[in-house]
Image (cartoon, rainbow, N blue to C red; front, side, top):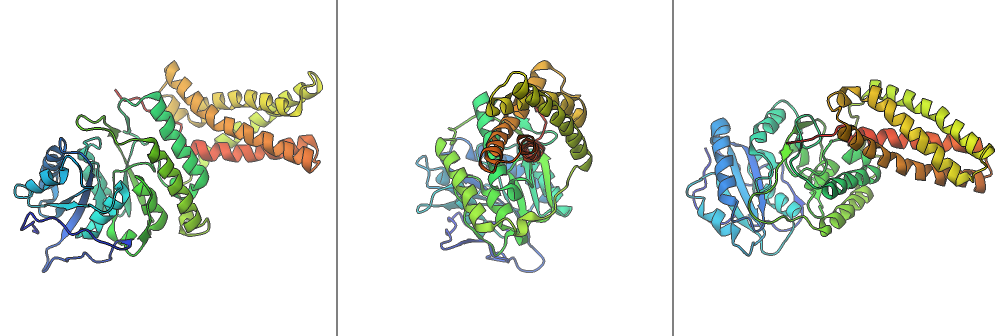
Length: 411
């Protein structure tokens, strides 16, 4: 068993954000550390003792002596690092790092991993919004062969406790934007915004990481050698102590991060690995979409020849009718396994709003394409309409697939 023989602070690594293949201080003999769990903190003095106590008790029951907790604090003005340091005599598996020259959650996690001695590296928030009991499920998936195990709010058993409509919208909007810019990364997990996961050291060793802001998981998937991914559902809880760190700057950093990954990883790299594809659901979605083509073209023809509306307005209105048609059939058939368990009117309305938001972007895409093909390339208006529908259909399936049909209501 490896213990912390002193309460001195860990040295902060400098230079590239790169994880070594071997631990910096490998254990001797047959003893080793299995899990290194990093807890990044900033102004969490009211939570730090509680989180360390809960995690220690949980891990002592399962892998006693085979883990370490690493608190990485960004020189909090409330001296969170000092509180954590005082706990090291009571919790010998606890190590503490105080960063005074760098800032940012993502880089804090990586600096913690650089000091870690485990073969499995993990991260969990220090504000108790990530339920600690999910840890062992994540670790179990790693031990069963996964390179990456992610705690997700968007799979069975997941959800959020009391987020506002605005925050839900921003979260889903950020995920949608990511799917457009970087589908090869965000398409591999249902909750790419998660900050609660474990990864094998070997999956990210040697890669130079270059994160922006808070979303370290994007960097791990984008630059690591991650083949098998597992997901575990969890309910994101509201914080009980301390203050939220969510600001608009996080969303700007997120976009910056997406663009950087897009430019530095490329579309033909290792991110295009095969992922599980629901063929049956795709075929049903395709048939519903095919029925929507007839609805769309019929309404488009009536608007153009009977009512004599303009091209753009006819395109938008006919597509709107097709969206309603497609939603009803997809809800009753394509995604019936989900919708049958959530039959309440408000739940169906939420699904319709999400579906409509995705399709609205497809309608705008249609209008742009058909105007370009008809007015610029002078292609027949009906052929231009068919091409525009085909492109929009691919868009609608891909985004709906990755955002999921599920509406998770958590009491």
